[in-house]
Image (cartoon, rainbow, N blue to C red; front, side, top):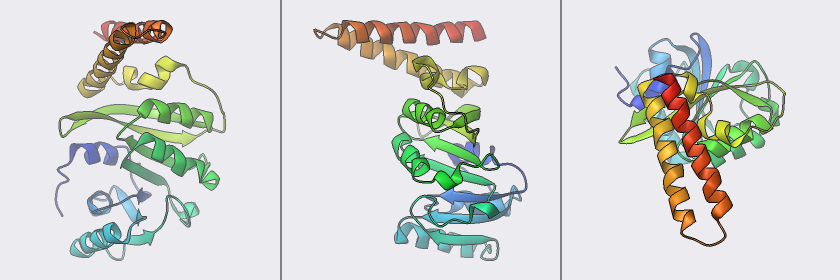
Length: 230
């Protein structure tokens, strides 16, 4: 199969623990799980998808890479039916943050500190962060990655059992401020810009003054984080 060209998937792969048994939820074309096993990052893998079509495409990739003995295909909704006791790292990438939340909420059996989740939300990362901590998960590591002209976050998450509410600033930034990478800083800057633009729009509408002030304050707080990192 060779190298994995997708920078977003490479960022996900970089957070897999060496020697892990990995499961890719929503494996789609199967390139990521095949790359992990073929490169030796993962010793075995599970390629999972809710759709028969994507799973068939994944199966073709697995066969083409000669990995039928090392990658098991599963037609499954989220984490249902997976042998979690045999899995170390679980990937849920390329879907919305709210969908990732629903998958985790529907799988209380996965609340196990031994497991690590590699999550890459395409949308609403702030809501995902809030939900993770509310469910008793915590982010261990987080970084920004650019792909296709957009910047996304990739996070490694584990279950701690400590449910808590996070403040709005953390929900918006997570552990990106501590990463120091160019794309993490870019994602923080884009978040601040989005908040500022939203605040400007809200000031033009009656009754949204408090929300506009909150967004402005959050935007300034993120700008201050970036200045402190310079």
